[in-house]
Each structure stands twice: as structure tokens, then as C-alpha cells.
Image (cartoon, rainbow, N blue to C red; front, side):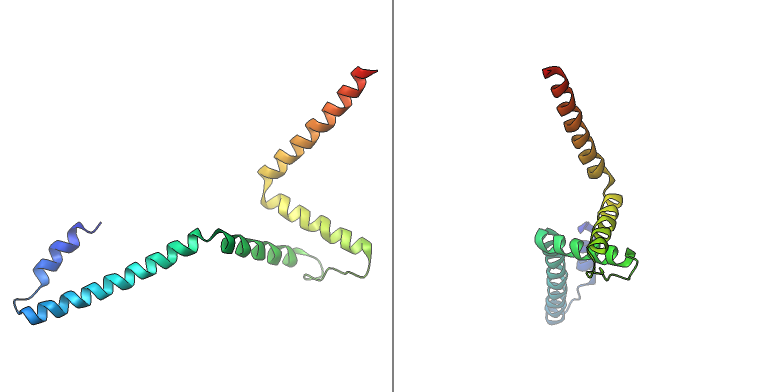
Length: 122
């Protein structure tokens, strides 16, 4: 990655020691800026709490965009609130099909287990 850069730099350094020192200082400052940007990017990626908030906000916006009233929940009637909750659940299920399928399989297994255990106890 940086192997060729060192060779280029030694060829670019001039004979004048003052000018060479100024070149090196400028190059060091440029590398520091690049390193600072890299550190900021890595810190942003490792901030799990902030990324989770961003994802939650994104999901809220997506769900609000898909609602028929443009995001208004129609809180005046309980039926409208229930419809809104069902629509939000559908959106999340479509966005995350694997966890939804796993939850469905778990609930199905639980119900089947309960039904078969009751039938055998009679």
C-alpha cells in the first residue's frame, strides 16, 4: 500500500535542505490530516449506539412514508391505531424476513408442542 510512496518521495526531495525540510513538513501535515479523517470514519463505524439510532430513524421514516396518510397515525380512532401498528409490523417483517420466519417457526413449534402434550395427557 505505502511501499511505492516512500520511493517516490525520495526522488522528489530536492537538494536544498531548507526546501526539503519544508516539503517533508507539508507531507507530514497531509498524512496527519488523512489519518485524522480515517480515525473519524472508524470511530463513526464503531459507534454502535449512534448507528442503531440512525437505523431506527431510517425505519421510522420508511414506515411513515408507506402509511396511507403520509405518516399521520389517525390517533382519533383505536381501529386506525391498530391498522397503523399492523402496517408497521408488515414493513418490518418485509425488511427482515429471516428473523420473522424464525419467530414464526418458534411460535408454531410452541403451539404444536402444547397441543400434542395436551392430547397425550388425556
